[in-house]
Length: 291
Image (cartoon, helix red, strand yellow):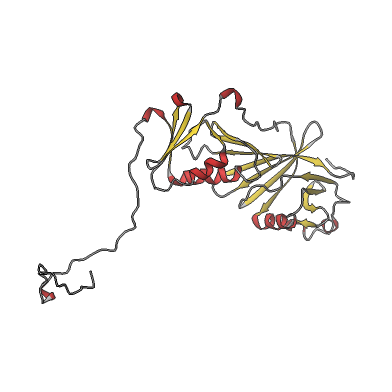
């Protein structure tokens, strides 16, 4: 204590000569951290224990998959994989790392509601997922909050399946950084779709209808590519689910299926977990197609 106020208290025995008092060293206070060894009493019901940092990563994944545009009324985690229909594409993410390598099955009905509720977990305790079959629900708790997730009737739940790409023939691929993605998204702000322009079996540019051509930096000095547009591309493939995930960087691979259709597989590095976006692309060119 640095400041003393003179007191009229008759019981005040503070000596007049303050030098007689041996000073007490007071160390700087550490910030209060609410860490406990909380563990649910129902140990036999625990199916996963998640650290606060990994629970934060889970919320980031859910933020990606549970967007305002998403119409999914349930989210299914099957063997620690989430696969959802989002904006005309299939979005998939393996979150086994979040569950410490365990293969977890979990249903989240009304995911938009529960994503908001998950964000109320505020202390530094581990988060536990409990299976409560007697009451047909899951319980998410950190000691402070016990949140109930009702289960859906099993035969009504059908997880979205990834397409079989084992017989897909790779055509081309490109790496796209976040800055390039932001430019494309800015140009396509009001577009319902964009076209991937392929020349000489290389993904060189993006056509935003009635607006612009965006040429990837790898081909800015390519004289043939500088003349590339939607009218002379060897192949133009239409995407309606372009860059749906905000990420640090992307790798887009385009393949040719045995039935003649085209598919793109976009790997999104979000910085905390990898998310894959699979989309069937519509052929949007009448020109010469080089396979």
